[in-house]
Image (tube, rainbow, N blue to C red; front, side, top):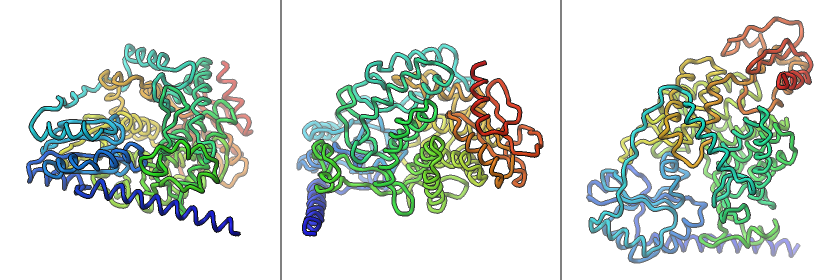
Length: 593
């Protein structure tokens, strides 16, 4: 009893110390600074005072953001320069997906200095030491050009919604050459799981490429070193060119991406270890970042004490960690992170048929529809958006809703996904593919992000197969024409996601339809067998005549006296299948032909 009381007191004291230290840090750094939080208000003040503006994009979970606060913004000279000559704007990047995606390559913290008209004067990536930062501020104060920043050239979209052969060949070569044969993943000093690289490799593996199968196994086995062995969940990345030097922040966005990829690999490669790793990620999210209403928060901090490396802390067991306190958890609820988690939970449900996973996905979706849905079909980011609505929220939620339709055959999910698809095409489509936010009067202006355009295009493409809507199909083709331009497709080190999109737009998804009553046990068994069929590009539906025709009524199925499944691959369609195991048998036979 006394030991228990002592442990509780230790935890309370540790939490109090953490709060006090954190308060001290921010009191020290902000004592002489007035941080604005609205970009519109900040630029309005900059215009009136004719001052440049500093945008400090921080992440509340980020170690180097804490160090920047403690060392750079706490420096008296830096504070005076900002106070006397600049407008100071501080924004949590998790709160603003448009700004986060625009400046993601600059890491966190990201520092962007603008003229009052919104033109960029300087950018800095990550932590900036106080002496270097003070020198930059003096140069801008004195009118010295710190660097020449040119606006990105306007991309001319490709004529066709498919890659030209030369671009496809170059991307395929990059996909192969950037793979690290020893450690898996990409050849880079920063090791992390590139979801698109793995998903494209799974696509090739499904077509019989044994080399890609081996690459997937190697990558996912090695990347598992980033899964916290005590609490589960994935650390953000590892430095040093290996998987052994993690940065300890845990972001919901990454948990969802890893969870989805491990679940897909488990289903396709029939490796229980991959499902176990997906389960460790889901267990962490459920135990640490999911609230009592079923919503998922944003992140857990890398540091126990802001600005102090926590390798020793994360080396402890559960009791050892908890005795010292808990790294800060950001429990903000955003549609973006919850949409990604819904999609990932459904992927793990399909691999395991664990009903509790599906129930969690449904609970989160219903909560987001109740609290984040906008008129017209879209979704807001948080309780109140500054600068929204944002593309990321609507696309993530739409993907989750479509996944729920696939997993449940409940038509309400497809109707809402289609409604959100209309919102996306209407509000976000632009000459840059799709913009990250609805056009506003902010001097920073609208922009698009390659990853967001890929996610949007991929969603609209598969949605069009379920709805039969030309508007959804045309939206997908619009996004693909922008992505297919060499200036975009070849702009990065590697981009397997565009290859995957190219393959999916040019083909029909694997199409599995169950015909039978929803109350028919044999029809239900066939539906569950269909869900177990692996793959990322599938159209799975359950046609119960009592519910009327399917939204995309493009196939005529015979009227039988018993429930049956119908399977169409890229080359063949089955006769009626009445045994659940017959679905896998047919697909195996079709693959061997």
